[in-house]
Image (tube, rainbow, N blue to C red; front, side, top):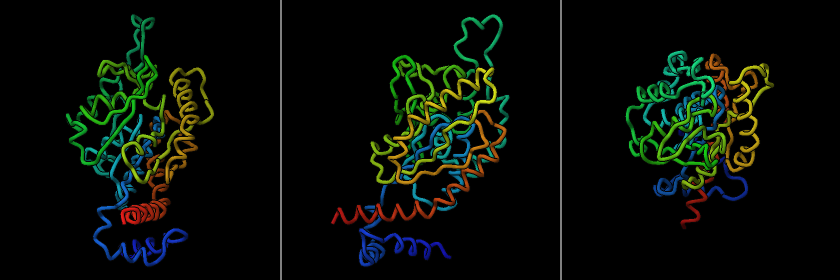
Length: 306
């Protein structure tokens, strides 16, 4: 079905209880609908390696030409969201992640001389260098799509929201798993992964004026298979707490995209292809629902403005 006809079909199919056919025809015939179009936010959760499914979400989102006015990200969701907001399309991000040499991406800090005073296992400096190579020295104001991300002040437990200033320090802070990656000192704070306090920041999307909120949820955990691994235990603790904290946040979303990641752990970086497909397929399945919700929200704004 041509996209124009599909749009019309979904538009008319959206009527059920609140709007009638005349309402829809009025919107279709009016040029004013663009002035009242629903502001749509996509919220990308954390999830470590599971969060790489967001790359597939973005690819499907772009291919289906779904509306997008704001991206909100935490942890790995902040990385994927920042790449997309900076102007890279879904195919480019896919290529970047697929070609990533993980051994070059991380730098281990463990040495016999430092083991007693170690504050992290992996340096986050190379993460920042990698981001710079793909996004440059951008500021939030330089982005093609408005973007907001979340980090945690490890000293106070506060949720820190970044929406302006330099992009890379904020994204780097948002994705620093505590105890694994080195904390980021920025704006007189010591910052770690945003997923510690908010792994699905739908509240920020609402605070930024979003009329419609779609959440891509890649959090959750699997049965811990190796309790002797420090990294596995730390990521499992964060995954469990993040899931508990996120339940209420996900209820605030109009649509939730939840890729099937039952066979992917937060450490399964080698399962990117699987995660990508899971994110892509889950978004395609939700595309019609997202379009329908967008139309209903836009209609609601138009009626309120009359």
